[in-house]
Each structure stands twice: as structure tokens, then as C-alpha cells.
Image (tube, rainbow, N blue to C red; front, side, top):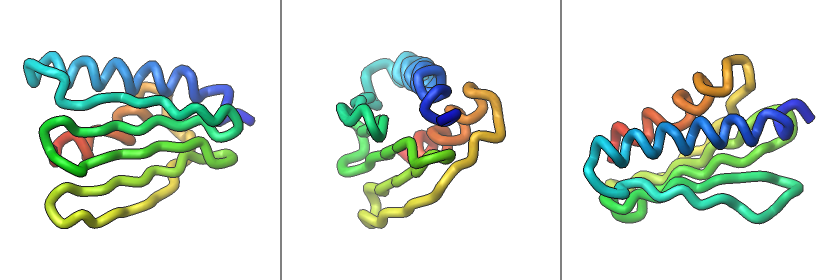
Length: 102
């Protein structure tokens, strides 16, 4: 329940990081798409500059399930992230590594 309660703030922090990234890039390099399933809130980040590169984040019980798909070899990875940081730090932890590889 705590994860679902914190999700809106984490999503706001993810959007802020994405906006900063896009501003620095000079265009919308990353598009944020919110999921419509209210039972399992999620967001997908899609790269507009690196074809087929996506990052999906879904509330999964007390943790966040993170699925990333790389553009280079189309490999997909999955991991779970605990909510043991601030909302802003969680957002940064979730998206920065993926964004650096775009």
C-alpha cells in the first residue's frame, strides 16, 4: 500500500528528470507514457532517439518492477526496486542509468 501511496510523487519526480533531460537534449528525446491500469500503476519511458529502447516501471506490491529494453541488442532486463530512498532518489535510481545509455 505504501508503494501505491508514494507512486504519484515518484512519477512526478520521474517527469521532472525527463523534462530536464529533454531540455538538455534540445528536444523530446524521452517520452513518458502513463499506464491506464489503476490496480497496477505504471509508466513507460520511450526513447525517441534510440529506436526500440524502453524503460517500464510498474508498482508491484511493496516494490517497483523495472523492465528495460536496450536498443543495441534488444536485450531485456528486469529487476525489483525497494522504496528505501526518497521519492526523488528513487526516480533518479530508476531512470538515470537507462538515460545515460541512450
